[in-house]
Amino acid sequence: MPQDAFILEKDHLVPLLRRLGRDRRLVAPVRNGYGDTLYAPVTDLEEDGLDLEARPQNSLKGFFFPQRERLFSYTVAPDTGGGHRYAFETHLPEERPTVYFGVRSCDLFGVLYCDLVFLKGRRRDAYYQRRRAGAVFATLACHHPFAGCFCNATRTGPSLELGFDLQLFDLGDRFYVETGKPGGAEIVARWPAFFQPAGEPDRQAQFQAALEARGLFERKIHVDLAVGLLAGREPEGVVRRLSERCQDCGGCAFVCPTCTCFTITDQPLDEHHGERVRTWDACTFSGFTRMAGDANPVDGATERVRRRFLHKLRHDVARHGRPSCVGCGRCLGICFGGVDMARFVEMVCSFGNHHATDEDAR
Ligand code: SF4
Ligand code: SF4
Image (tube, rainbow, N blue to C red; front, side):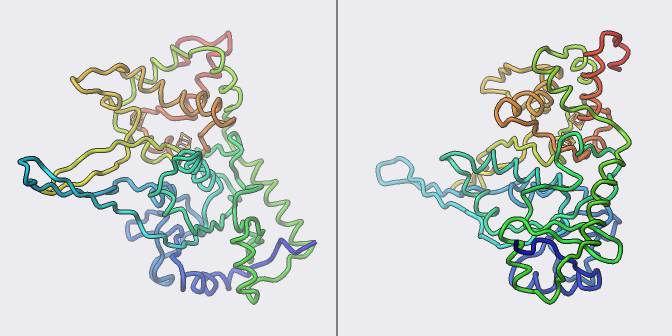
């Protein structure tokens, strides 16, 4: 059987990352000057403050599907017949082989979900595809869940069975490293001096760490129960109560690794030039489904909140066989109205209980 588990001494991590970053871009959780940890390109490992302890505030979504991107530009000029002649230039991004290091399990699952949206079927999104090409993921299993996380309930963490190229477990003075997809085995084969074969005590320590992490979630969020309840009935009271607290800010969708709504606008730059731009949108925005003439078939805050939660827990289950929430907990931190996925799931489950009262939905 080929060796598929290794030990990487912590002292060897920075030298390894330095080599990884020589011929490709390196993205990792970095603590900035304001104390915020974000997934960001690393250019100087000494200066950039690698932070493998905190949960990054952003997900990886923006690296493949940017918040704003120019799709093409156009030029319009008068033609000889008295009309106009248009010329278009497409602006596809460059392919940039990238190692995403220290990625949390839920965030890799977020990327795999975006793949379903942008790469499935015949009409692949060329912009996403270019950014996604050559991506290698080295995940870091969580040894202690962060506040608000519930990846145990969405089966997207705290460690993974598949999807990663490398998966690291923190064993104190060393990392236990599993290889998954070919990109991980290639890294080990290219720099073997950094990796020692894992022994039986290492395997036991990894097993113990993974088991303990699963038992440390304080809040039990019953996502499967809510999915089952939502398949059979509309949680009208829950949606109504939550919608009273939604302020239409879009924060929940923007931090969410699996929210992929966008809008496209043509933006004139001057009389003869312009560009078509794609930007993130959010289904909780009041103008999300507004049409020409100002008609809106899905008006009202109740419908907007309903759309957000049912998309993830009902429609994506029907389409892909599983909810598209990865339990990252980011919407719990961003929403000042408390309109988050964990609360929605709890309220749906509470309403499924005959003893629940309207007060439970407040
Ligand atoms: S649910 Fe919360 S975060 Fe999302 S749009 Fe409404 S107020 Fe903003
Ligand atoms: S709905 Fe909330 S918890 Fe679920 S993936 Fe999106 S931000 Fe994370």
